[in-house]
Image (cartoon, rainbow, N blue to C red):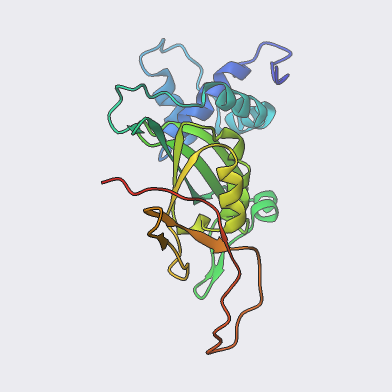
Length: 244
């Protein structure tokens, strides 16, 4: 499907290289030869040990497409109703968050992903920012998005919206707090339970209806002068009831 099959018989055919790349994730502290040794352990000792250069070239020939296709085929929820911690009141518990990952220190990676620059200097390795959507009860990854380290988590989260659906309860930390992303996630039909930043004016009690009305600013607006009594524009985006 990804057209990465070898054209001639090699010591490292494409399917073996896929296993090798997966082994690199499982044995992340090992060298190339250490990963290879772990993969063939227990098999015939007549295996020819490929050189580091051969393994590197094999990875380049394989490319990212087969691994991406493999992820798309096997990713998704796996919990059943009997899985402990996977559901709450009939809703599948999911969460998304972001993280930085170090990649090889090459000019190509530095250009594509960039370094973090701080008061102590530049980061040693280029960094990729990843956002992932996971199933809480099993830690199964439902979807993931990658980009340069300077890409905002909210931007990456927008690429994960297609994996949300009704019947899910999505948890998120305060870095995802925002009117636009909240509305987009809500429109998928998923239920949302997000931590909000301390500056948010929520929730507002609606005592007549016995519920809480969380609100977000309705889009960007200029900052108010110190001591101003003019309220910020608000928009109600959801209502919910507290469960005892």
